[in-house]
Every structure is written in C-alpha cells, then in structure tokens.
Amino acid sequence: MAIQKKANGRWQADCQPEGRGGKRVQRTFNTKGEAQRWLTAQKAAADRGEWSPPKRDNRTISQLVHEWYELHGHTLKDHTGRLNYLENTARWLGDPKAINFTAEDWILYRKRRLESPNEQGRQPCARTINHEHTYLNAVFNRLISIKKWTHPNPLKGVPKLRVAEPPLTFLSVEQLKALDAALLQARNPNVRTITRICLATGARWSEAETLEAERIHHGKIEFVDTKNGKNRSIPISRDLESEILSGRPISGRLFVGTNFRAFQEALARAKLKLPKGQLTHILRHTFASHYMINGGDLLKLNKILDHSTIEMTMRYAHLSPEHLEDAVERSALYSLERS
Image (cartoon, rainbow, N blue to C red; front, side):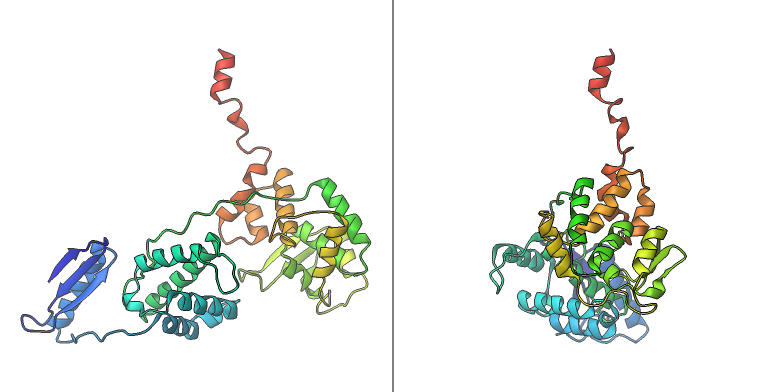
C-alpha cells in the first residue's frame, strides 16, 4: 500500500487489498488525507472478507448531470434552466468520462471558452463561466453526498475566474421624479404601481408583478416562492397599500398581463439610459442604495433583499453615512496637519 504525489499535485493511492498476487487498484485524490482514508477503507474491507475489485465507472459528464437531475435537480426552482445550462456545459466539454475529468481539463476548457465565440457568435464572459463552474461543482458535491459518486470532486479547490465588480448604479431623486412623471403618462394601469412596489420594498420585478391580493395585509407585503425559496414580509405605507388594492381583484393576481414593455417605454420617455442588464433591476438597486444613504442597517437590508449571502449586500455598505467616516480623522494627512 503506497501513496505518491503526482506531478499535477494530486495524490495517487496504490494497493493490493487481498495481498501479493491479488488485484491491484489505484485511485487519485486531491489530498493526501483522502488517499490515506481510502487505503484504510480498502484494507478494512479486505480484512472482513468484503472487498471486491471496483468496477470501472464509465459514466460521462452528461450522464452524471442527468442522474443528478433525477435525484435532486428537479426539485430546484429553475430546474429546467439549470439542466439546460449543464447539458450545454457537458457538450462544450466534449462530454468526457467523468472519471477522467480533472481540474486541469476544466482550466483549459474555460480558457478556450473565453477565447472562442459560441454558436451565436457571442463571446462568453468570466461571469458566465463562473456560473458553469458553480453548477457543475454542485452536481459533483450532491452526488458525493448521496453516495452516487465515490471519487473526488475534480473542481474542488479550483478558484473561479476573477470578475471585476460592476459599478453600482441607482436612480437619483431627480431621475426618480422624471421616471414617475413618465409612468403617469403610461396607458398601462399597472406599471406605475408595480414600479412603486419595487422602490418601496426592494422586490424583484417578477415578485411585484405576480403579487396576489392575499399577500397584502396589516400594512405589509408578503413575498412567497421567491428566488431563494424563502418567504419575507416587508412593511409598506398605508397610501401604497390603498393604491395597490384600489380597483383591483380582492383575490388572486393583482396585475394581469405583461407590464415590462410599458416600463421600457416609460424609461425612454424619461430619457434614462441604464447599464446593460439592469432594466428593471435598477429599481432594486435604487431601493437598496437609498435605504443605506438614509441610514439603514446592512443586516436588515440583507433580509429585505432576500440575499443568500451578506457579501452580496455589502456592495451597498459604502453608501451609508457612517461608512468609514473616521478615515478623515485617522489619516496620515490629518496627523501631519495636526502636528
């Protein structure tokens, strides 16, 4: 029984559990500890008379993806989109046998992806490839946790690509006034109210647009079946509550039809140009930014926005009036001027 470090930094375990003349087996692991535990398990099984030579695992990446989907993936909120994403990733990888897939293969793959346009001629960005990384890593981790993949996760320890944080854009008070005036001109009876819900609660556009009358009570809006699967209740003013409920159904969806186009048209009338990909999401950014500018609490904002991590909410921390305010009186220039 032996453990050897390979040139790629991984650890190869080599043993003959049944002794000299028996079947020789090898496995490669990310850490020496994992290799040692595997060797110990093989020897213990042989001592109990329960050891048998492992069968070659010939499943491809796409087969693992579909097994993951049948056992777990179908329970996710966006299960269809996630499966499609993973199927494309497997195809772009060349659908290798999973047992042969390594961290080096992934690193070379993402390099090719960054340098080559896809079938539509679009160049994938680092953020897109990081999504692929996250999803495929989750497939391996889930299958490992339910004992359907007994080998190491090839993506374990592989860092994601660095992504430059985009500038945080939100609407100023003057821009909000211009947008509200443009919304008042809209023929769509819902678009202004949906916009105001987003600005008052930080809700995603889809959450506000699909709101049901039963979810508004006692001065609060309850958002259910959200992106992260958690329900949350956000207080609103009496005026906004009256506006939402006035003249609308007393049960079921409050806003019928699609209101997105009407919002686009209002932005155009207000002559507001937004960063790519921030059309309705600008309302969520605007709520969070003004919340912090007005002295809001970062942890409360995390709950209001339904962020999965505090790191996502930290993007707004610098807008707080108290953020790093002592930098002025603790700087080197301050010491010089006071001396």
